[in-house]
Every structure is written in structure tokens, then in C-alpha cells.
Length: 285
Length: 300
Ligand SMILES: Nc1ncnc2c1ncn2[C@@H]1O[C@H](COP(=O)(O)OP(=O)(O)O)[C@@H](O)[C@H]1O
Ligand SMILES: [Mg+2]
Figure 1 (cartoon, rainbow over the protein chains, first blue to last red):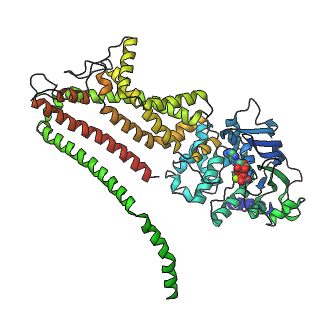
Figure 2 (cartoon, protein in one colour):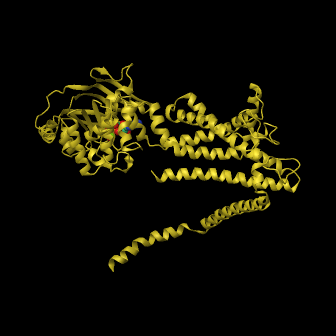
Figure 3 (tube, rainbow over the protein chains, first blue to last red):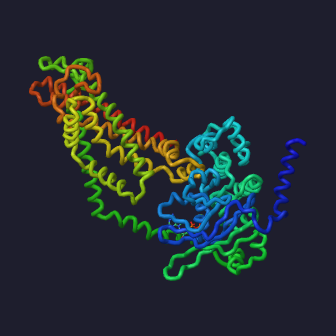
């Protein structure tokens, strides 16, 4: 069996992956239990409970300001970088509370990577962008060249950059830069990849490529994606969480919360909450 | 036809408003601005031309290879001062740059807003920047006496100048760090890099152009500074090359100050010639700073 047929077969499983529906309850790698997140005294998100399933794509959707990014950042402790944030409840990764006393946030981020809204390559060469993570985390690698190639192939970027690895990453197009950021993330071999609106700065063609890439990546990784684009959630996600924000009693602050979390097919065809239905049918948001 | 009329009708009030801004008051103000600029440039020009005319006769090789002399101003040179200036500046940079960059990195990247100690340091950096230069000379002299060092040495002079430019280096380094996009730090941390790795491998390298520019400008200021060093005493008549941290030394501003104060014409010519050399050195440093800044702003 030559490699062409293998990749053909992989494509098939990816394509047919949409028809093989995931199990009713996810095999959770990451579990949120009554998670509330505060910025200072402002409660941005209230009591979110959800399971992120292994080798699934979970989409977080909802109107802007409802706390999607806030929830996403809490999943790998990137919110530690914002002074004054506080997380209550538990977020456990393979049963370990990632906010536990003896947990090192650096270790959490090594296992749970993140891709940002705006492509943010480092001001370095393409090669050094990918090699940076393995270098700083002190990964034992036999050949950095092989690792870089593998990561770039994994991000479907190798063919486009293999002749200019030493050139600055800033010379790439926006879509290529975003795939470089994905390559950089998978180079440290995380288990989970968080993506915060990864396509919002990209054109439709670049967006389609990233969506295809996500479907490929889910074979090896677990993905959580925040998206503004409901079609995108419908196209790629196995499960979808719908958030909304409603004015809290007392003051005018809007606190986000999870309305409904279910299989994407269910959310988009037969949501159980009327607010979900209103949102996906475009009646608000 | 109809469209043309519509267009001119809609743009006419805009143009009127634009002209309305240029009333007589703003024209007077503009005139004053140009006037002050012209005055500044004129004064500088006169000074430069004057110095050049006075000193051009002594812009010769002797100026660079000979030591100063009480008796033969016609043959005296600024050798000890030029070497002294270069040596003191190098030592100043070695003292001030690591310290300043480290302090700025701490304040900008690690200390939180609520940190009392950081606020205290920050406040004092601002205070330091406002202290007159001569106070640093007293400080360094006091320090030398306390630890039992001779005052008029390269090391003590460099300490005085390093203290003088430390606030400038800290402030410009903080600005350079602040200009590095947050996304770069986030990208690094999200890969599992430590904050220290993020600083040394991403943030500081990205800030180097800004840090270099600020540092060179600060050093060129230190280069022209005489007041703090005069307080260290015994620096005016030096007829040997500085040869170590604890060697005696003199610098160009001090040498110029000494020569310019003497009555013989020959000494004043010498002072003018040495001023030209100092000016060229300082301008060259500033030019390097500007080149670095332009190179990195265009290549981004
Ligand atoms: N760094 C921050 N500091 C304070 N408040 C924030 C910060 N980031 C987000 N918020 C607030 O938290 C709420 C949720 O924001 P966010 O998670 O960015 O929403 P979304 O990603 O769904 O648009 C908003 O009310 C927003 O103003
Ligand atoms: Mg967001």
C-alpha cells in the first residue's frame, strides 16, 4: 500500500467522520465543574460545567462578550497573565485540577497549547518559529530538522515553505502565518489545542484550509475552538457549547453562562433551549 | 452637469472650514514657531562656525598623539583626554547597561502594578532623572571615600556617569519593551516557555533596537558631561594614558574646560579644536543611534 492510498484513506475517514457521530457522552480529557471566572470583582462567566471529549472538536459559540475567550483562556491558565483574574470551581485535566496548588502553569501550557485570533508568529525565521517551543521546553529530539518538517507537514504548510525555512515568518500570508502558529503549537506535542477565533482574520480560502486542517488534527489532538461563525462550528465541531450573557441582577454587568452543550448536530437541528434556537437562526447576537 | 454641481456644493463648506482655521492668530503662532526655530539654528551655526574658525589651526595630528603641556600649548594634544573619555565611557556602559536593562525588565515584565517595592523603585527612577549631574559626582566621590578608593580613578568616574545615565537607560528600555507586541509574549508563554525564557529569547531581542538607541544617546550625553567628574578632583593635568580601572584619567570635556580657562590664545585654539573632536564623536554616536532605529523600523 503506497503512501498515496494511505492518505486517501485518511481523507475518507476524515470526511466520513462527520457521519460517524461521536458518543453521546464525551470521553473527557478536560472537565469543567461549576467554573466561574472573575476579572477583579466582575464575574465574567458563571458556573460553567462541560466535558471536553478526547479527539473531538468542541466549539464555543455565542454573542460577543459572553465569555468564550475567557473560558478558553482558563483552560490552559493563559488567564493567569491578566492581573486580577480568579477562577472558582474546578477544571481538571485527566482528573488533575489544573489550578491545584502544586500544579505548574508552564507544564499545563505545554500540554494544552493555544492558537490566537490574530496570527502571532515570532519575529524570527520560519524554522526558528517552529523550533522555539521544543527548544525552550527542553524536549529531547534526535533531529530538530525532522521535527520541524513533521510539524510543518502536520499543519499542511510544508510544501509552501520548505524552500524558505530560513526566511522571516513575517513574509508569509495571514493564512500561512496562522498555519505556522499551528505548526509551532503541535511541535511541542500537546494533547489539546485551544483556538480562539483562529480564522477571524483570514479570507474564506485560508479559512477553509484551516478548517480542513482541524479535521485532520483531530485524529491526533483534542481541539477546542471559539468561533463567531456558526457555519464553521456546524462544519467542524463534534460538540458545540452555546454561551450567552445576561445582565446580572443589581448592576448592569453582563455575566456569561453556558446555555446548552450538546452534539453539534443536535444543537443545530434540534436545540433544547429556545435561546440557542434564536441565536443559531440569527434572531439575535 | 448635474453631478458636478452636486459635488461642488457638498465640498464647498468643507473647504471654507479648512480655510477658516488659518486665521490671523494661528498665523502669528506659526510665525513665532518658525522664528524660534530659526533663532536656535542660527545660534548653533554661529557657535559651530566660530569654534571651527578658532580651532581649525590646531586640528592636526599633534592634537591626537600628544599629551597636554603647561609650557608648549602649540604642541600640546588631547591624547590622554581622548583615551580617557573612551575608557570611561566603555566602563560606564558596562556598569549602566546590564543594571538598567535588568531594572527595566523587572519593572516592565515581572513586577505587578500593586507591588509596593516596584512602585518605590519606579518613583525613585523618576526622581533620579531629575537630579542635577553634579550630585552624582558628589555621590561617587562619597562612595569612593567610604570604601577607601582614590577618587580620581576611571572606576569612580564611570560610577558617577553610570548613575547619571541609569534613569535614561531604564526609561528607554521600558519603552522599548512596552513596544513589543503582547501577542509575542503570549505566543511564547502558550508554548510552555517560562517568563524568563520569554524575556531573554523573545521580548528583549525584539526590544534591542530601542534599547540600543536609548543607550547610545545616554552614553553620548555622558561623554559630554564634565560637572560630575570635576568633583572627583585632580583630573585636569594628566600626561599619561589611562591603563586600568584604578588609573587616573581625564576626559575631553574636562580638558576643554581647563584649556578654555587659560589666558594664552594657543590654549583657546586647542580648546576649540578639541571641542570639534568631541562634537564629531558625539554626533557620530547619535548618528549610529539613528541608523539603528531606522534600520529596524523599516525592516519590520
Ligand atoms: N482582560 C480583561 N479584563 C477585564 N475584563 C475583561 C477582560 N477580558 C474580557 N473581559 C470581559 O469579560 C467579558 C467576556 O469577554 P470575552 O471572554 O472576551 O468574550 P468573548 O470572547 O465571548 O467575546 C466581557 O464583558 C469583557 O468585557
Ligand atoms: Mg473573544
